[in-house]
Length: 342
Image (cartoon, rainbow, N blue to C red; front, side, top):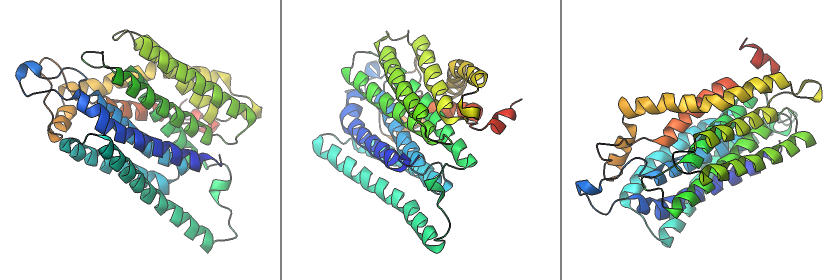
């Protein structure tokens, strides 16, 4: 997909702006007024942190999309995501607030994004200059390995969409929570569909039309999840995951003879319906019992700990790990990839 580069960079830039706004506007709303024990926050109190972390992940996924799954883009994207999370914790500790802070973080973040994107771009131009007679891979369909990476990125973005759409807070009354959840989920839907379409062996009218349909259906699903009452979002989330991840396979996988292998996608739909929930539970439970990673991030950021009756769960990390698990199952765009599962 020739438009993968500008689309990926644009989505990464939008994610930077969303991260900056979340840091200066939403994060202060989640922090308690004092250190008194009776005011210690409860489950999911730091929802703004999870939304920011998912925006950071969207920055990295957008770079993977911009690089069409190539390692020279994927490596810096992963490194940038890790460094950005560390910077996020330090900035959170400083408690920035106000329009000036938002603009400063947005401009600084976009500058960092530009520098990171410039490195693989420079390398590509240097390589093409050395081998002028050799066609660049970016001009044609991506290689098999790159297609797997793009499909895996789409799966990660799809599972993160479910986490963002279903995120809750102790009171479930903050209008800003709905705004942040909808904006973050919509961004991740765009990343998932864009990566899925970029992984296709060829961009046809049928696939483009399907991409539009999957996007609209997924955005409607996100709205339905947010409209459901807290505690009653499991079934809408599962349905959203089934639609979005099955749509990713329809976009990314081969169509022998010009048509999808429907029974393959039927199996994918079943995996997409059940898999995200299973992986989320399998990752969240150890994080609550064995590895209190969320509490460590809370302490490093200088925020009040969650009260002893609740747990400090880092939902964004659970979503990332669950997305990688789904990628192992669904990032098989070619027929030969799927035959290996038999």
